[in-house]
Image 1 (tube, helix red, strand yellow):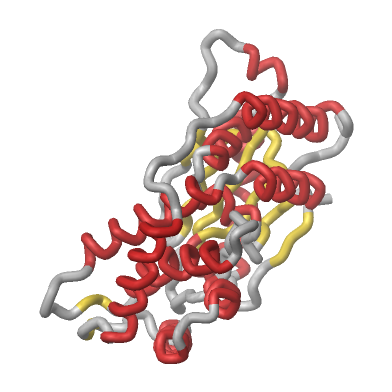
Image 2: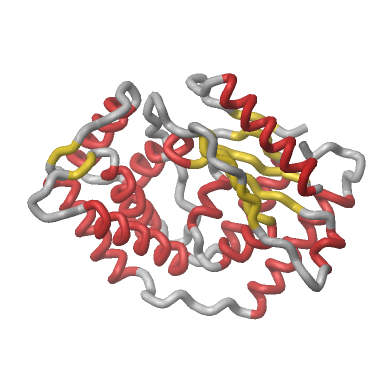
Amino acid sequence: MLSRSLAPDMAPEAIAAVDRRLADIRAAHGVAIPFAIESGSRAWGFPSPDSDYDCRFIYVQPPERYLSLWPARDVIETPIEGDLDVNGWNLAKAIRLLLNGNAVAIEWLTSPIAYGVDERFRAAFLAFAEQAADRDRVARHYRGLGYAHQERHLREGEPIALKKLFYMVRPAAALRWLRLRPDAAVAPMRFQTLMAECDPPPAVARIMDDLIARKAVTRELGAAMAPAEILAFLAQEFRLADETFGRRAPRLKAGERERADRFFRDMLDHVWRERPNRDMG
């Protein structure tokens, strides 16, 4: 059985639409989907009343299809319809991205909202991530994400759409969380947990708590000048990240590639060989 964990404010008709879309993908592409979760603002912990449903999944092809001389695309994308967005990555792609420090691949594993998750698959993938994810690579991802959002949304002397603050504070908080934990590389996905565990300045915590509460009951937070406390927090954490983490992502070592290959083969066995009669749906 795949486990489910859904938020009480999620619309039943949207959940049913996601389930239908996943069933159609399994049938049309002949793949197993042992992992389907919610990403975006609902999973991060700061949804609005009209937030989209952003289902993300990892799919696994039958083993023989990984041996083809002409491999298929490593993503499955479906049309965005209304507030429904359902897309996924091939298991092989998810592993490669994780090894390269893509924090999205890591965050999916800790999503609190699950449409259908094989918990053994998730636990194994999370254990692999905790061993294989490189802190410098992950930090490089968050640093690039933070700088990109600042460049896109911050203009000196101009107001900012307040909801955009979440997309700048999240990577800064993740960098702080990593900096305070020298032996860790997998930061929490849920924003409230991330903020609590990174222990930001009290003023920053108060501002973001207020924005979360307001965002939960309104479709539009409006625009205002970015609070000075938030700007100072961003500047400090990105500066400290530049000083703490390597600027260049280290190359993968032979041992890392071999460990990734073993994990990949183990997951193929788990999904397609160990339980051949089990519906991975």
